[in-house]
Length: 489
Image 1 (cartoon, rainbow, N blue to C red):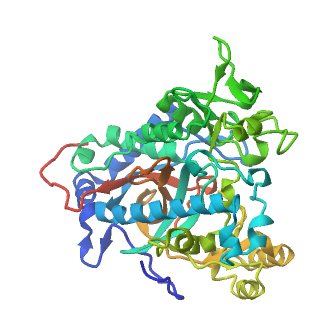
Image 2: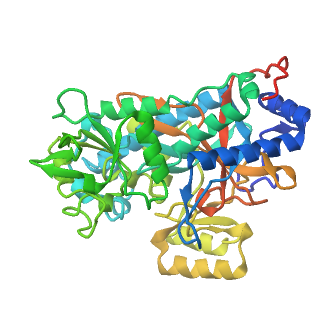
């Protein structure tokens, strides 16, 4: 995949059509729209909203007035990838997650990459995401990051870039699954006319991955549960959804206790031993005896149980060191160092503001760059230079000068666009893609992932917390869709 040019194209890559016309993968969608018209799409959008409200698919957005729970906008025009495109991405994702996991193991082990001078020691050992209690720890099979969400963007027909790695508690997979279910209900004929790669088996793959992570002292079939911070968490719906789909319990810290370094959950039939916890609680709140003593979300003694080999925490505490945005520029070197391979997926060039030379460049080019918090998420604390005001750039310059290590900057990419149902009709909107990568005894990836779409015209911010929406992501075989069917769905 090509090097990123210094001068970005002024026109974003249109995934649906080029100068020659509609791309083959989108031929069936284009024909459906021509046949049924915009009114039919608008009706389907209303049906989708009613369906999501009935099911209760919500996302809490903090800081908004009134009821903090709302629906994530769902666009009924799917985003489509050809099978050949997806297969290339899947190979690159597998390679990347293996290298990230190797890096985490090394960071809390021999630190060979640091000793080899391939990554600065201070950037790791003084990083807020570095979990000192994990030094010397090796989880079952050496897997630290069982569930990863890798954010990808596209800038051309063959140009995909990794924008961000999520190795702590990546969210959004429930929307990937619910979006597909909604499309199958709303457009049964259209879906049948495409050879769609399925995604509905993700919960089975997730459960198998978690079972493979059973701790050394587990006897018999492992008991798996999801540890949630509770119903005030923005992704609480997802925690309950995944627990239901996997047939496991969703528990809060108060539902668990530790005795003799073994974790138990309280049930109506008495205490039941828990072997694997898919935890959606941040490191700092896992165990008040080891991390934040004021935490009411975690379980006292759970880290000792983890160290004793009596419970597995997925993802492992400290895995976040690999998705820190200041570590991100070193991932290609991780691939070379640990795997002896060249990266199949490329990074976006990144400036570390703690470096004097990088900081000077960033301050001189704020109007051209995207500036992000090195440890931020959800689109918060970000400056999109070309869309910023002079006052905003002045404010960010002051922030960078005061705390340069907190910020990184990247070129403003011309993110690809896909057709989206807007108020005035179908319009091009920018998208990214978050595939979910599972790592147990093997790497498993459900084809596609969550497509997030920037619903505001011209916006490059796709995060749900910033007003973005979602789309179903179709991976289809490399052939034009059959035009024989005239089904109304």
